[in-house]
Amino acid sequence: MIRSARPVFLVLGIMIAALSVAMLVPFWLDAADGNVDSARAFLICALTGTALGGALSLATRGEATNLSARAGFVLTGGSWAVLAVVAAIPLRFAGLELDWTNAFFEAMSGLTTTGATVLTGLDDMPRGVLMWRAILQWIGGIGIIVTAMAVWPLLGVGGMQLFRLESSDNSEKILPRAAEIAAALSVIYLVLTLACAICYGIVGLNTFDAIAHAMTTVATGGYSTRDASLGAFLNEGADLVALVFMLLSALPFVLYLLAARGKPGPLFADPQVRGFFALVIAAVAILTIVLMVTGVHGPEAAWRFAAFNAVSIITGTGYASTDFAVWGPATQAAFFVLMFAGGCAGSTTCSIKIFRYQIALLAIRRYILTLVHPHAIAPMNYGGKAVPDATVYSVLGFLFAFIAVFIISAAILGAMGLDTVTALSGAAATLGNVGPGLGHIIGPAGTFAPLPDAAKWVMTANMLIGRLEVLTVLVFLTPRFWRS
Image 1: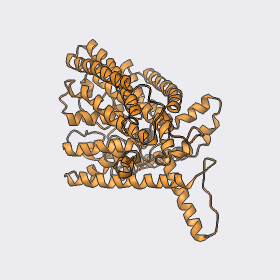
Image 2: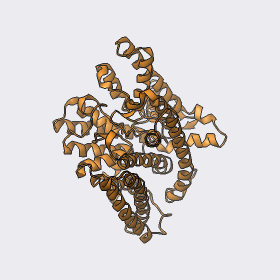
Image 3: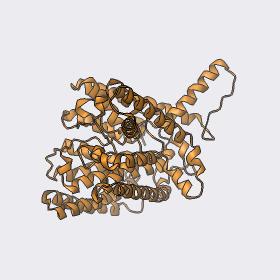
Image 4: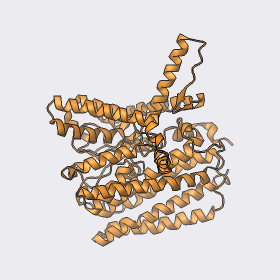
């Protein structure tokens, strides 16, 4: 058992060291600006984390090629929790007056690209802290893409078997293949981030704001450098830039890889891409009509506000260009439903994701057909591929688990004294990694700071469970998983 855990510790040590090295960027920014407390916190954490992570990886080197499926679950689940702890330490000591609960909440929200925050006064906050939040989301974005395309298909998590990128079913050697996939997808991710930053610069954002928002836009994370989020840059047209790159980041990154290799066809023919854009068009059209009919905005402003905020919620980015809590109960209900949508598999988005709804609908259709024609043969095909029953069961199991965790967490939050809107939307926003909830407390104009600490821990757990596709975390609760 100890020997089989060695590759997990090896990779974990590398991750801790890499995250710690990234702390030198906010250290440099705050040192240049004269923010002594923040700069000192980042420097000490960077040196300590690099040393500890490096020592851990050196002590377990040479074991990474023999990673079992069980070790894969431990690595994907444990690494995100450990890295959130490491990321929270500089926030705790950066002079922000955050206790451990709030620091860990903020760090977990960053790494899981949720975007829920307990911080206010962002306009006057040290640049190093703001950049650290952006770095966490950027790392979390590429991390979830690699995990979704390289590891989860081999582990059969939530129907991700459909997106297996290699013919071998052998899960004993996950890391070598993951390294190849990570290298290719990371280049695309970096190019998309640079393009987004350039576009933000073109519309008038300064270099710091352009880079920070590009990192959180492509990661569909939603952390901003301003309390008003992207609403602070409406005159520059930053919301339109964000709209384009939120949509691009919600598409499967592996399809970009195929397009770069001269095969653009799948990017337009993929059923989940078509389903995603159908949902976006329908949601934007309905919200635009509602805003126009109710007289909240004129035609041009209605389309712009509806498109940006709807796409932000669907993709789980969590930006806001206005306080849509004042749009009325009908739009609030619409946004609550959209929290459960998500983008495409293999993107930086979160929540349930389009392909699972499509597979579930195909399964329902086949079931109804077999009721009418008991002897009929009704194969299921998705994207030109036959869908095995194991994949269908995996998808349906994910949907059941997701809904169950949502109901349980919402009930717990309600029992803690939160009002119904805050409890339901808070559970949905954190489990779906969306960011802001609904209502006057955690809505787009509020923060999660006023919530009791116990509620924050429930929501923090939700962020981790949701980002790791629910089943990856829940599998740890099964006794059979821990048996030799």
